[in-house]
Length: 288
Image 1 (spheres, rainbow, N blue to C red):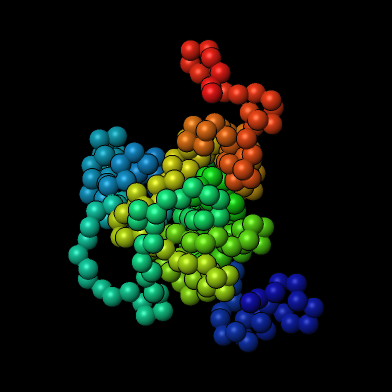
Image 2 (cartoon, rainbow, N blue to C red; image 1 turned 90 degrees about the vertical axis):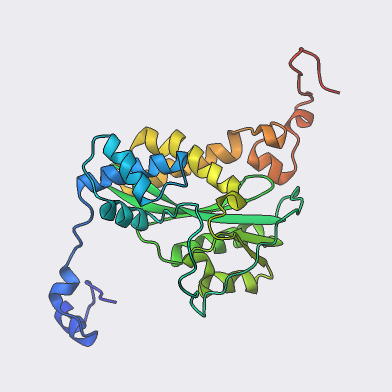
């Protein structure tokens, strides 16, 4: 709300108008310590292997790695990273009245064509001197990443921006599936889907397997890009992810897609037919 380059109003006057102190405007958060950033990187790496680890078990893991940490710190860091272990918890509170939880629509539904089902999720992205959050929109049948956004906070706006870009570029799918995260249950996010005529599907609590394809995407992205390069800044991270997503969509064949890339599967292209070739079997004979 404060414009440092305003032609008529000084910063002091703008602060008076919005009823905040000038010191509040100039305040910059200290961020996490170097130790906490290192712990968050280790937590993220271990959580990919054991998504059922809560703060207690994660604390034991880190202690065995030589870190003297308490459970309260681990719980706070996991909450900041948006990590929730996949075990059932007692239902102690009702959801916010404006955050409706939608039923899961994909049970026993064959998904074999592009734009039938899209899915989305958010993951924590560690950097050498900080961290970001990444949201991606994926086509379920082809595994193609349709849009993505980075943010330094877990607000809803960057998720809405990614969704609007995907809808603008590719048109609406029939069904959109997410978990029950507050960003996806928010009115801002669900209203975009409703306005586009999309059916909304949400996983059950703790059922990360319902969104397994995008969970696999996170694992591959982090091992092949994020952990490998240890980016310094947000812009460097953004460029690195952009390069990786481009290669993933256009150059990475998937065995589950008959050795096609996600982009070829999404567009219905048969690369072997286009090149005048047929796949060769393990015995050296062309497949029928």
